[in-house]
Length: 151
Image 1 (spheres, rainbow, N blue to C red):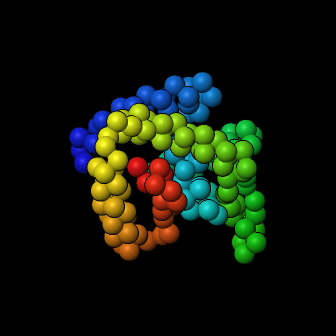
Image 2: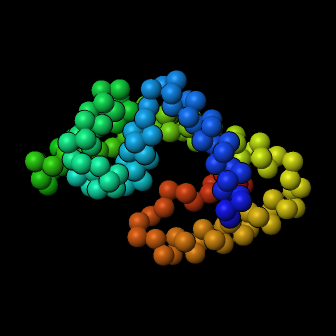
């Protein structure tokens, strides 16, 4: 797994770094977008805890993402003092484009692998994911929908 991670992460992070710099998005902002998508709706304080960042820093980060229309902030109907966060349509599209970049890195690496080897790997990965989902605290956002997405 370590070798696989090193092989893929080099390509993924290189591609993502270039895109994030072009769009002026920090790694923490990117992480916040993924956390909001995974735990939506999520409070500002819960997001701060997930990010390991102070509440003021998280509020400032959110303000910028809301200004750029990547995230939406609304009042919690059960507690009007609390704000809930969700991705905007633009934020969903933004993450979708980034995931295509990441999948491109996987395709580049595994594009020459024999189809039988890929099928065997897919079966093993699906079994692994199934077991991980059984032990997860929250519903996962990574359930594969197509064979290409499971790579």
